[in-house]
Image (cartoon, rainbow, N blue to C red; front, side, top):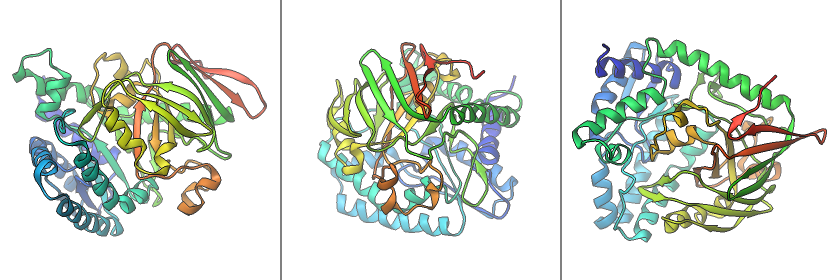
Length: 416
């Protein structure tokens, strides 16, 4: 039987070789922006470091942090000093990016981290950190350097996901679930991922060949049309950075995705899974759009946190991503909510509020000031929320005016 430690080494090698596809002589940064490496992640960070040096890394930087420290600082510390600290960190990260570093983050958080803390302090802290890293994140989403998100457990997160198990068994259970979801529990994860990337790219090529101009989503609580910008394209795992290095930004990933037209979204959509954002749990999201803009929104739980997302800036009133994931996704089939967007978005069709990836012809060369003109949305935010279910049906309108289904009862129709 393969031990957990051996599996972690394989997982780390997958993240280094397939995730960031680290090149010999490159620097690697593990932990950036608000996603620092927590004490519980030391073992995994060490595995990543070892795998990185095996791949020829010049230097591995590990930025350690502490979620408990962040909670207490947001609750009682100087938010002005926290903002200044974020600026210093952003300068350091940007310097490494300018030198061609690759970046790995380990997204893991307590879904209830900021419960009981004044909402305005949470919002001020998270927005100041996002503002400090905005330039870095703009360049990251423009794929100017390689980056990857790959998670590992912390106890408070495991306590939520596996509340049905004894406390002492939860973290190991979450590890096993993460490795399975990440396709990292087999004999040769790297080879399995190479085939997985091919399969996802075939699906994106099929969607591109359809020449879609509009999608129509129908499900309980959802009746939504999304127009697509001219020259848009669908993509999936394994895209190249602007430097020509193929990388996988999310491990796991089961999605094909594109950028919707900023001003061509109309109707109502209802979430099907909880969303954890900045230490707050949001459930039962309902949003109505007119001419692309969010004109009405509510949540059964966590509405203040949802308001922080949508009211962050003008761009956060619009969509930046449309992603398709079938309910026969292995992560959906696990039947377990992860309360972590990295996993839950790969179990469900989802949309992202805010910043787009510039997935139109010539999009990566566009100035940000010209994005709106081409239908792309810019924002401080990029927040995915899940809308898929076995009751979801999606029809598309093609350039020729043909209407056809691409998803029925949550599953893709045949590509034949």
